[in-house]
Image (cartoon, rainbow, N blue to C red; front, side):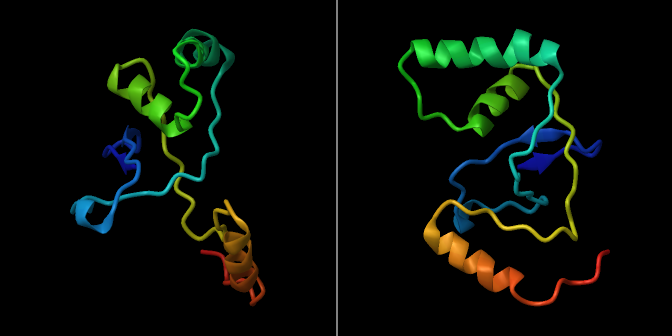
Length: 110
């Protein structure tokens, strides 16, 4: 994703390859979001209901959030997690990689 100068998510980039890299900083989401109940009720749920009603059950959450941001319905402030040790795991292969990464000593916190 990219962030504005104020630290708000400007856009999510899905399925980006190295040929798509830009000169602006890119950030990886760790898919931890916090929304108040009004935002969920008024923006997220209606969009999700519409997707499911259309038969779409494979859309990534980032795509829904991107639509809401583009439509001006939502602003998301990014929280930088530099210095945190984490790794996204979606498969047994990822688990093996994470086990190797985290088996060594933890780096000193920044």
